Image (cartoon, rainbow, N blue to C red):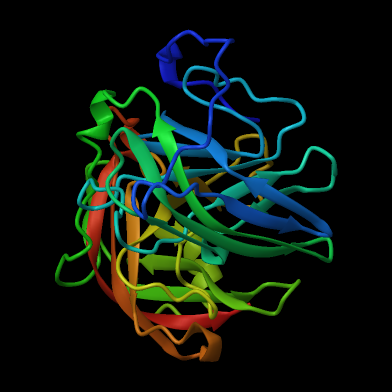
Length: 336
């Protein structure tokens, strides 16, 4: 579902003026369009708009006219939607390729309500969002046996571009030295072990890093990690961009950070013991991962992945979701 402009800040629609595709911000004013193939259907997305959301920018590409002045989605319009987080420098990763989650919809095929994961998507903005948001996007996924892909350039209007958090949304740097450490809910945290879970897409066989887990205990391995998750607090980074064999992207990549803490279900008899419960570390878009020469395609059980991470909660986060951490890691690969 395509949302309206944030906080109702869009101007009133002018029904006598149909929005037109925006000219390219570079390249002599040629119209930009994203071309997609969803199964056996071909669609073009020459229209779009963007607006602030979740501390970042939400981008909507459409097969039918849409704009800040006329934000309502048409029932028969195809759409591609994604969120661009602010990045460590607050520049929304401008000029750098990143992986972000992309949702797409073809109204003429109810089965095509699809998702491309961050490791299946490459987004690159031409510049930091201003009056417009311009760049390129490319993704490929296989859903129910059908290949769904899109590629092309876009240039869309940014609605409500004076929103305060567009100027104050920078997240922590990923250049911290030393082991991963920080503070969680007021308690110090230092990682003694790190695990990199490498999965394979069941539809394509493509390898990707599903999660990075940081344990306070040393010596955690592929056989003992589940036992440690049931008795100690663990930090997880998931939904990472640029961490698959076909899209190994350089530089910091968006991720989502969680705190996994053992809790006993009050509704249980008590025999089951504690089980890990996930809590987001702040809001999505304030965690980053950078892998060093990952070679995800060749990763096997017992190999090592190295890199750096950072995460921080936003101002006003609940106490149990408050924290910050960062540092470098040397993670043991566990395959799935």
